[in-house]
Structure formats: structure tokens, C-alpha cells
Length: 417
Length: 94
Image (cartoon, rainbow over all chains, first blue to last red; front, side, top):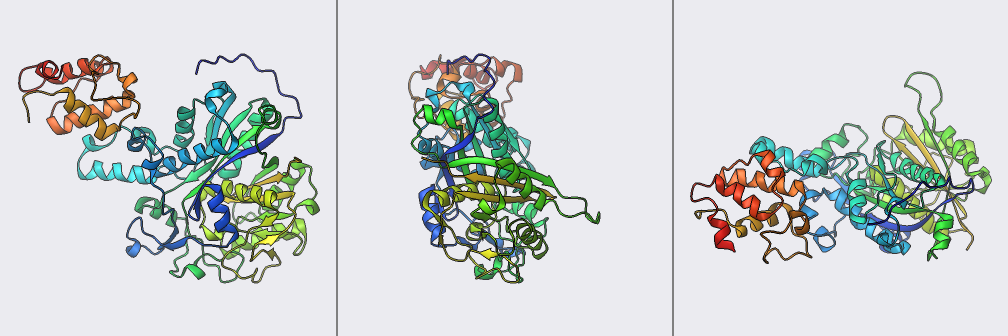
């Protein structure tokens, strides 16, 4: 880490942000190859919570990552100071960098930044320290609690681990944050930063995290995994939370080309975000506008979009808003719609980056992953993909909404090779 | 409890509360090495002092702790307040 940067010339207006590496930690698979195989097969990883006894809670199902042992991947120096979400994020980052063929030590440290999203921070770590505080006293609280719970801690730990001192930060806006972080990364690329580690990982399947999630009153309280999370189905009754997400290497296209990047999954072509009007205002929800803004930003016409990765709230009223936004822009059954998050549960800030990864793999492989659960859009005018569907995918649109009125939409486009 | 706080007591506690940098041999001659070179930052030191307060009832002065950059200085701070003879742990460990 001896590099010294000088004032950087403003990048040309043609700077394009592309994604060159994927690091996935999902309930359905660790690493994007395992995740993608499970996703295409429609394999679901939703079951009764095992990380704590859920018997006393109204919601008892979750999408858990079952086979992750942090000590297999990370130094014992990191383990006492990191929440599970940070451990997953650090390992996902290692995978993403390896996938991109990037050795951070080879790049100037101010050429690389870290912008992730977070929804809840390190709940499990915080819970343990609060328990220590109230049961044993303040001397038993870890000094690492000072940052281990914090929203920005994933960005910070990734930055420290890889010596990345460029523009960095965190976005906190529930599920929408996962797209907003990547949008922020793209803005830095346009400003001339060569590489940003982005995406998000959340993991708060612990009693304290659970009751915080219950406050949304959107959690499914069913015990049958087949009937618990049914977006775009009139039998929808809330969502199942999951843990995990994806870390993405967002890179200036020219930089990727210059270093001979092994693969470019696609371009972050467009982005739009809106905020819903206050309830009772009589004004329409903001999602349709967010979709239109993203298409406009990407200079893509609606008919060029090959697939929509839906937010898929699993709440009838919210599903209706999303279905209407999609049909108003793309027409009745005018575009393939899918929600592979039905196999993992909703991952909060990690959900949209995981959808971006799935969309990029759809582009790569020419196949749209299925929505698991609702056999077809039941009562909605959507072409909901129920089994993996071969299709030429050149443009994919990803929707993410955050609790409280956040709407974010991102357009990904294939890059000619 | 022995009559002093030794370097092996220190490394044992640091391993427990802050883990261990795999590239460092904590069982080697570390007394005069900088904590940073041993893979420990200021929070690791703080965490260790918190553990000493719990286990031994010895509360270290924050300002003195800030200046304790090596195990030898750190052990000196602890043993100044140790019920038995100060500094014995260092002698025994080296």
C-alpha cells in the first residue's frame, strides 16, 4: 500500500460501469455457481428456523445459509470483531475479486472504493453484547461492539481487508438500498474511479433481528414452506426473510478491458429511484416512475427489456402496485417476470444485488430462472416465469422496494464480447 | 492465580478476545515487538484490558494503555497493580 494518487482527470462522458465479478452467499448456495444451479432447478431453501428456537414467535420460517463456517475462510483475528453478515460479506468479496481476476494489491489503493448497502446492521453481534451488558455488566461488553453492529461495517471491513481507500460508504434503505449502492458505485465509476466493490449482505436471523423484522407486519406466519411466500398470488400472506446477498465488482469498462478482465457480465446501463407519496395523498405510487426513469437513463425502450426481476413483496396490495407498474410500462403479459427470491426469502439489502447476479447470469446463459411457489401469476396480468425458461436475454430490469416507500430500479445490459 | 501476570497470560487472553494473526508466532520472543506487528490494533488492546479487569480486577489507566505499544510495557502496567511483586512476570517469561 505505497501508492500515492494524484488529482485524477475527469473521466470522459463515455465512462461505462460494468460488472466483472460476482460473489454470492445465498441460502440456496455459496458461490455463484452453486447458487445458479440451485436457482435454475427451482430448489428452495426455506424452512423452520434453526438458528434459534422460533416456537414462541408468530413467524417461524426463514431462508438460512446452512453450511457456512466463517473460520474456514477468515482469520481468527476477524472472527471476534465481526457479525455474521460481515463474515458473509468478506467471504463473498473474496469470491467476487477472484471471479473478476482482480488482485487488490496490484492496484493503487485510491483507485478502489467500497459502497455497500445495509438494512439492519449486525443484529446478532449486538444482541449478544446487549445480553452481556444486562446479564453480566458493562465490563463484559466487547469493545468491538463499537463498530461490529454498524451499518457501514461491511464496507469498512472490506476496505481494510483489501486496502481500498477510494470513495466508500453505505446506503440504508431496506431492499432498495441494494440497487442504490450499485447506482452509487456507478456514479463513482463515471467520475473516474476504476473499481468499486458493491452489493450487500444482510443476516439477522436472531431473536432481536427477528422481532425488528416482525414490526413491518409483512412476515408470513405460515408454517408450510410451499404456501408461506407467494408473491403475485391472491393467496399471498407476507414474505419469508432470508439471509445473505451478493457482492459485485463494479468496474470502469475501459479499465476492465485494459487489465484484460476475463469476463464482463454486463453493464449497469440505467437506474431510477423514487419515493412514494405519503399515504392518503391520492397521488399514485412511485414505482412506475422509477421504472420509466431507469429505462430513460439506460436509453432503452420498454420493448427491448427481456426480463423483469420483480421486487415480489408477497403482500397483496404491494404486489398489485408492482404488477400495475409493470403492465403499465410493458403491457399486459408484455415481458417475462420472475422472482427467484421466492427460493431464498427476502434478503433485505442483499436481495437486489443477488437479483442483479441472477440477471447477469441469465444474460450469460440465455435462461430465465423460475419463481418458486405460485404456479403462475394468480389474479395478475403478468407473464410470471414458473419454470426455467430459455430466452435470449440482452436487457434485464431489476426492481427493489424498501419499507417506507423506497422504489429503485436498475437496468442491466449485455456487453458484446 | 499465580503471583504475577505473565506474557503467556497475555497471549492467552489476546487469543481469546481478539484472535490471532496466522502469520505471527505469539509463542516466540514478542516482548519488545509492537502490538501492531503482532496483528493487534488499539481495540484488541482495549478488549484485552477489559478482560483483565473482569478476570483479575485490575483496571488499567486509559492514557497509560494508549502508550503501551509492546507486551513488555503492557505487562508492566498490569503488574504495577498486581497483588504480588510487580514485573515478575516479565522476568519469568524472558
